[in-house]
Image 1 (tube, rainbow, N blue to C red):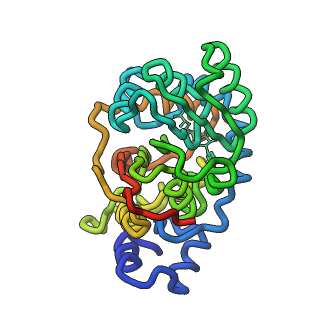
Image 2 (spheres, helix red, strand yellow; image 1 turned 30 degrees about the vertical axis):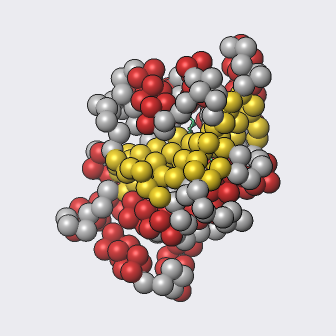
Image 3 (cartoon, rainbow, N blue to C red; image 1 turned 180 degrees about the vertical axis):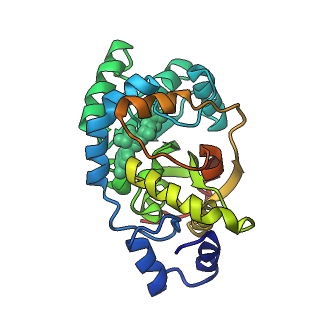
Amino acid sequence: MTSPSAGSERVDNAVTTPEASAQQQTGGPIRDARLPIPSQSAVDVKHYYEEQTLAYIEGFGDVFQGSRPASTTDLLDYILKAADINDGMRVLDAGCGVCGPAIWFAQHRNVRIESLTISPVQVRGARARVATQGLENRITVREGDFHHLTDIYQQDSFDRVLFLETICHASDYRQVLEQAMAVLKPGGFLYIKDFYCQDYRSKPEMIETQLEDLKALNRVYHLSLPDLASTVDLICELGFRFKYLREPDYLAVFEPWMRFEQIAGLAWNPRLSHHDLIACMELFCQRPLDHSSPV
Ligand SMILES: C[S@@+](CC[C@H](N)C(=O)[O-])C[C@H]1O[C@@H](n2cnc3c(N)ncnc32)[C@H](O)[C@@H]1O
């Protein structure tokens, strides 16, 4: 059985020990963010969103984020400020859904946004919403995979790269973050808001239940959530500089998420509360001015 303490050993040891890689390939529920998971496929994620996007819209509205305050505009205002998005910037929204966030950002700041999603259904929905708001000249929506950003976008070209509850689907965090680093301008910032497994090294009696719940969560949502420690290690290894790492500063509500699960018919019956299982964190990190392109 995998355990968070096994996770900490991986942090100290060589990155690709045979055990670590075998464990990642069998989809052990506590993921080390530094290692790829070949079994986690972008094609599966694409199919998942092709099937579930309507249920997401019904459950969540146009912003598909599980961690949120009661008001969606409060959430978007919070992210705008947290990611320090300002007039004149060029922003990449990596995993854009139907552009609920991008439209709001473009309405509140004079920015240009490139929106990327793996799902063609979302591309159509996003383009229709962008057109309705008359924002086609400032928001461009494309279908593509954020593991291959440099195939789609120019290097050194974004002031901000945002992952708003999206990188949790990555099969290879290292590749995605290297690509994000490459398309950021030197001095630009990466903003990630996502979930990480709670760390129960100090409460081993919780681990077995947590692992069962995580297995179900990962399966149902086509995720493989990592622990925070290995994610921080990876980001530092790649040369990003942390500006902050924190829990979002709002009172989270879970009704939209519960509504979505009911509409989508996704039952995974966790024994732990969401908060005891996973934690939402924000990571805001800079590509140093003197950092040469990693790809
Ligand atoms: C939970 S939704 C969040 C959507 C959006 N950020 C929002 O706040 O409404 C996850 C998004 O990540 C996108 N996604 C997942 N894997 C992706 C990949 N490999 N490349 C591009 N987008 C991806 C999905 O298509 C979906 O739009």
